[in-house]
Image (tube, rainbow, N blue to C red; front, side, top):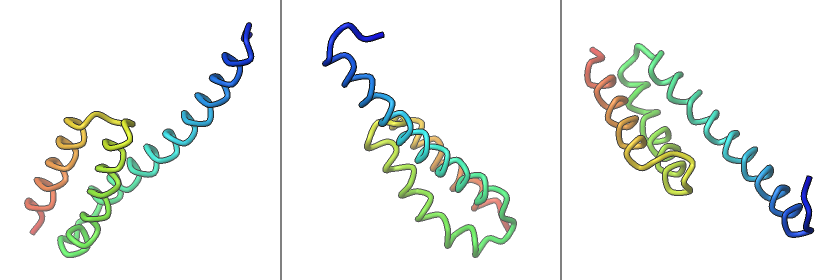
Length: 84
């Protein structure tokens, strides 16, 4: 329990931000999963820029680390290049 009004406000802000970050992180993970389950190269190449943008946004706002974003994007590119 908060002992000060400012601590109470901080808890409210933190909870709001946590839910916001959780929503966008989960949405991005689902998009990555859908792209990796695609066996059609054309469809994967069409969806890749959207997924890359989602990953970049997460890194920009600090939900994930920039190196993790780079690793995810690299893995997606490798997957797309392996498709025939």
